[in-house]
Length: 150
Image 1 (spheres, rainbow, N blue to C red):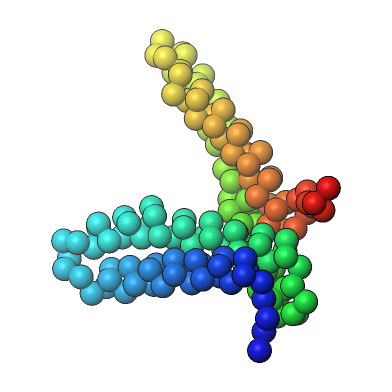
Image 2 (image 1 turned 120 degrees about the vertical axis):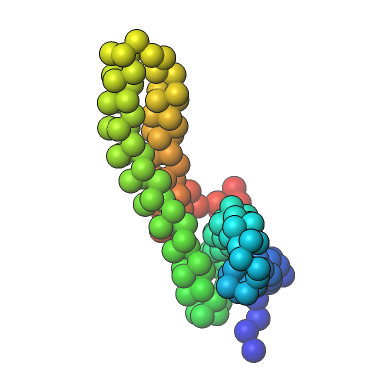
């Protein structure tokens, strides 16, 4: 029997519930009336799947913070960090690629005498996402700041 702390159990139960809801919504996408697929798919993509990713990140952090003695729980903590690292890579890629597009949109709008506020804001947002992606990647790989309780 694997003995884990209450905090790890709580995080894993929350992750299990969110995963079961997501699995149910995926199942429902294939078995509901054709008119409802868009609604179910929207709830799945906008709410359920991001919740699963965020709860897996939370569970991974809790496991790493609690430092369990069981090897399989430690491995589970590493596996649960994968979605966070992947999200970091996606955000970094967006933060690198989109400013190239955004700057050309800004220049095109200015050349045509239009306001370039929207392309400017999205370009700045992309640069913020670059930093956020770096943070997510570091946390997902376990390279973030260690909290020793001091």
